Length: 164
Image (cartoon, rainbow, N blue to C red):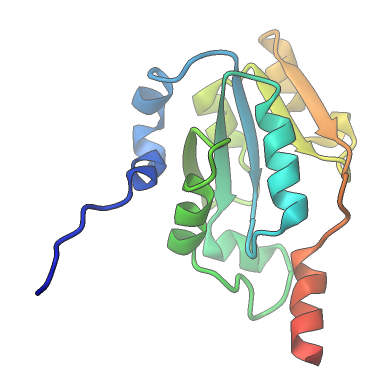
């Protein structure tokens, strides 16, 4: 017997960039925005995301497209996980309200479209160097660089796996 199961509810958190404005209008404020590759999700990522989400009532995560990840120079074989897979994994996290993506080298366009109240990056980013800093500060928002509690790296994890 074949059972036709419905798609998991978290898949509804996936958002095409063209639909971002309408979907953001449904989210409670203050709105947090963060971004990254999040290729192989690890403890450092989920801790950081939970800390970022605690700064507002809802959170958007913008993921680098596969082409954007490749341009970052993380390695010819990166990302390990496709954008579609990374979006679904991110959407499954309770702290994430909406997940979208960007193909450019930076998420500035998604930041401008979403007009977050709070912009967040990890502790390796000085606040003034975070893409969107001047724009978010200009409309009265806050920008945070959240210190790492668990120093983890997907690049280091991939290297470790390769040695096994």
